[in-house]
Amino acid sequence: MTLKLRYGNFETLTRQGPLPAPACLTRPIYNKALELLAKVDLRGRGIRLVGVGSGGLVSSQETRQLSLFDDKNQARDEKIAEAIDRVSARYGSGAVKRAALLKKEGEEE
Image (cartoon, rainbow, N blue to C red; front, side):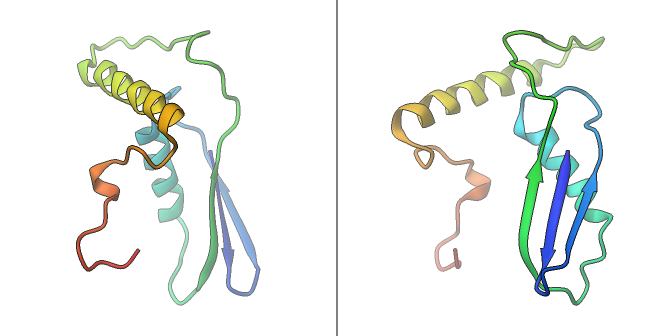
């Protein structure tokens, strides 16, 4: 995982780190991005760009990381992600959103 920040003066900072385990869901990627961001001192700095990147990707159909522990939520979350992908492919990327990403009435976008 790579986190890229560009400040108002165009200075660019990158931070990298591996995921703790192979992932096919957005949550572990999001958590790693937050972990990398927490290591950066942002006080008093305007940010004009934030980027998150990944590498070493493989198709989840080709390989699957097995766990020593049953994680029933993992299978459920994967089915939800696949359903969201199907709806987005058919109706467009804005057709489905997580409730946490919705803006409250009167809140700026």
